[in-house]
Amino acid sequence: MRLTDNRYASEKQQFELALRMIHHEARTRTIRLCTGLSDDRIRKVYTTYFRNAGQVVVKRRRGKSPQQIGLFVKTPQNQLEATTLIALYCASLLLRVDAANKVHSCWPRPDVEYGHRVCRAFETYLLLHPKSSLSFEWAWNLLHNISRNSELYLAICRRCRGKYVQDTCALDKRICPSCALSGGPH
Image (cartoon, rainbow, N blue to C red):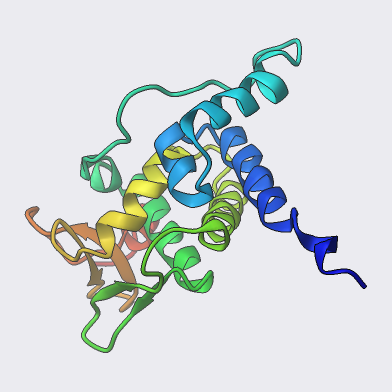
């Protein structure tokens, strides 16, 4: 076996992740954070594999990634979807919840493995919520916002004791989105 057999393995992983993230319509900055590829290289990958493929099925989002949190708690359905994503991030070992119900990031900074885990969690989320209201970039925003424990936190339902995503500044009736959507007894 020669030492050079796997010399392109790292670059291949970066490239595969870039394709996967472009497919989810991630912004260039988000892709760059995980892959380490230059902005120009990411645009060339998009042009080569997506834009010139005949039909433009994958759009390129421009501008900054979303930063707001209102969408996550706007409706019980959105709250349920955000809570599903948090559970998937925990299952993917991207986040952990401590005994005090605080959320912590498990990774010091994004890398290729981190990017693949985010993609797997998002793809599972899409399977669970086929008519999803959160895009990849909104899911990325949620992942980073919840771990700061400043604007969003995990509340505990007074009915079922389940955890759910809640805005720290909003009035909380302490009813999780599952209980709110099912209309169970008060």
